[in-house]
Length: 246
Image (tube, rainbow, N blue to C red; front, side):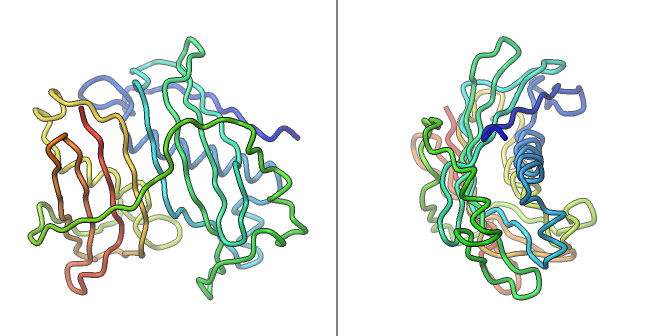
């Protein structure tokens, strides 16, 4: 079986924002769906894992793009596993527009954990090395890997409470919903004047329905923003993001 999978999409009107381009949240969901389909077709998807008390968890993601698909535009996403380590695996993506030109890439880092123990599994030996057999380090992904993100802000710039629409099948806040809440920190007027071209997110801990979450923001002079989402009560970090604007 091929090591690279390609999935075709259309940017539906309800997937576009005020600018007429696909939202970052919808694009993030498409990336995760591509990853799930690729893994399932090759024997290490969620359905099989869940039967054996295992599950995939997303640890880090970086999305970088020259442009985003427009409303009604057809586009494609390639995905492949770059490397498999003992506790983590690197999965990459390429985003192609309707003309077949690559307009963006994404890098993700995943771990497989026990659903009850929440402890990581040994990916190099699990399922007789099946996952490692699909590694394809020869395929280029020319963007930088997600970096370390540090936030020093003392006062929150935003707050939200996790509700029904935030919660996924695992019972915690969906990984993409954090992206959407972070994007909500920026006004439409600001986003009309500045273009996001890279977004990084690192997941630290889980949050659940009813949790109150604060968003702390640091801004650099070059329109780069670092955001940390923390539990309001415990002040435990949930995730950290970095946004590169121009």
